[in-house]
Image 1: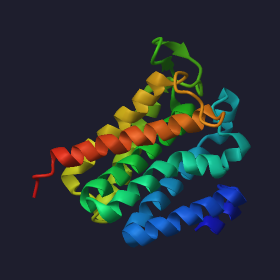
Image 2 (image 1 turned 30 degrees about the horizontal axis):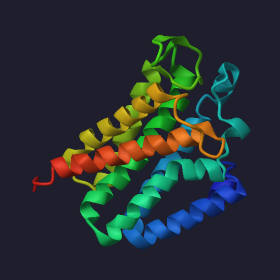
Image 3 (image 1 turned 135 degrees about the vertical axis):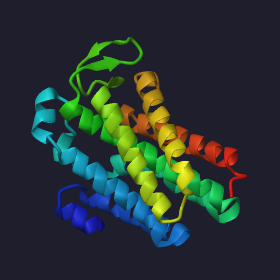
Length: 226
């Protein structure tokens, strides 16, 4: 899969190696079902990146390098879900699997909101100032992007539910948690210290961590559900 992504110019060579190592570990912990979740994230995220790329480029909201993801981008979205797989081996597999799905749903919600909002978002506002902002500015959101991000999160959690990783009644709450984490990231954009000098990646780490944590809390809240 990683090599196919390189040929499709969706991943750099180093990004593909990183994704391959992550995927191997995830497969060992959560078998093929858990492995399909980041695959779904990657396929959908790459598709949304390609949609209206030229328009996004004109508006200054396009991913650099034609949308190719490298090591930083892969880790920014996948490191938190990867870390969440560790307690699955030792503590509560069911609960932390929900967190795992929630982290990936948050990553896709954020990516989709940015990519789809860059194409169809007519008016963007900056959450901290509530003033009109240009597409692609950190902290700026649009109605189209927010709706698209939420829909993408629902789709990913539905896939996870279809794979038996989470229960169907948890789909909407986990997707809502993903949206809440993404909006919180937009609200705090510019305030989170850059990790290793890369602000966007540090915000993605924060975003997925919050989404995963909220999903775990949702799992605890619904723990008595049959």
